[in-house]
Amino acid sequence: MKHTFFLIISIILKMATSNAQSVNYTYATVPTQFVEANGIKFAYRSYGKEGGIPVVYFNHLTANLDNCDPRIMDAIAAHRYIISFDYRGVGATTGKQGTSISDMAKDAIAFIHALGYKQVDIVAFSMGGFITQELLLIEPTLVRKIIFAGTGPRGGEGVSDVVGLTYKDIFKGIFTFRDPKFYLFFTQNKVGKDSARDFLKRLKERTENRDKKVELSVLKKQLKAIKDWGNDKPADLSVFKHAVLVANGDHDRMVPTPLSYELAKRFPNAEPVVIYPNSGHGGIFQYHEEFLKKAIPFLTK
Image (cartoon, rainbow, N blue to C red):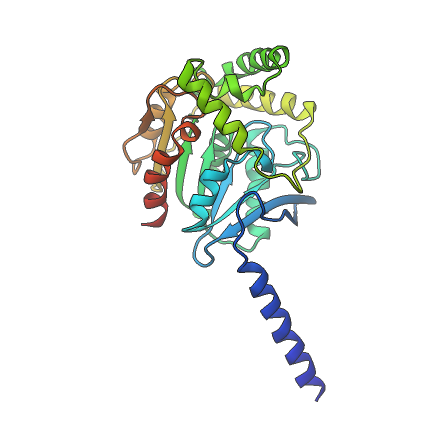
């Protein structure tokens, strides 16, 4: 009788969990969850089509969970289970910000393992692409497919220059009362400015349970990590046979567009590079519909 009682309770709990997971969330409504790994309490959001290999989104410099483009996240979630997370010391994730790109990669590996996954696909934007490359060097079998956007290889010419450019546009944003991403991610013509406004508006669609703001100390540490990584010797990426898709805008000021071609050349199974016209670092956000027409088939085939 006692065994039967606990069996019934177990079934009820499983049904409740299943119902909770089946809620049709959007990125604006999906709850933030937490998991512990490496002594860190990681904040993350996950939703979408369950089953199979999940997609993990690796975000950009000083980005918290609210900096993921909901159009891209929701579109991928319609086909795949997608996960976003805060790096160590960022947003609601505890601990002190990692001091190197390699440290951030080790944290990401621990986070993925803590969720119980043995293999994932990755969509990596900007600094997220740097972290993904270091992850491959540590545990290549953890990854199946990778989309790199607005990023480049370690030691690539111009990568370390992002530090000065970032500070310059941050101050520009302060003086013009604008988010620095308005300048950093988009061209400053009419098309670029309109796209910037649309993108920044999308990032505000989530009105409740938003993430914690990123502290200034995180910016300083991440920029130093990027500078060190950009000045480090190139890694041999030719040993990795992963399916890779590289995308960028044709006027990326943060991670110069030629580095997208250089990155793709280093992976033997990279698809032809996708470059969007009249766009900058945030080319995939400006052309999110076109990007998704490439990204979703790549991730689902």
